[in-house]
Length: 278
Image (cartoon, rainbow, N blue to C red; front, top):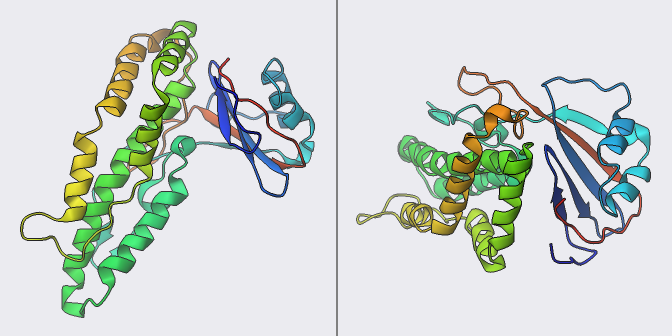
């Protein structure tokens, strides 16, 4: 992949594992690594496990790991909702953030969607009378369930693609990414990060926020094609793969086992250089 600025964040994707680096303005670096493993896996030496699993990876990954104190490594499974909730609202009680739509960290949208939830509520509740509250909460439910369900699913798929373990599937993934224009990747990211500002009530001829959301969902041939192709390419290979991507657990009374381990840490000064695929 192209060389990046030392001050840019990025990920390196391998087979069944990935490593990400996020530089901070104060010369510290936050890094994370994920491994395909069984849920609840325990390592006697978590720092040593990271060192071994990423031993052959490019600089500055090794330097980041070596510069990290062993007691600074934090390990946990990764979970998301097995399926979107049927509703975020019950009576005058509502859910927002991870309580409503816990998702994998692959798109970096967990906290962001919680902020969107809060911002949506602020706008919808502005100058609203008590008699209008039920309809406003129903509107919040409609807007936020649609958007978060889409992002939750795409984040899950991104994790599966990023951590595919089968060599052939990983090769197909790398080839597809190499052929994807940078402007398309940027457009895909923009669509995820662009927040359709809601209106308190749907307009007579269609609500701008709903229309914008629907248009964003129907005008994504690049993103849809990439994920659809990835899904078709990988589904026939999963039988021979180790478990893919991150885990899934707990959604509306259903549970699915997790397969992801995240190893997270903040560390002392290290300058990240380029980010490549293995």
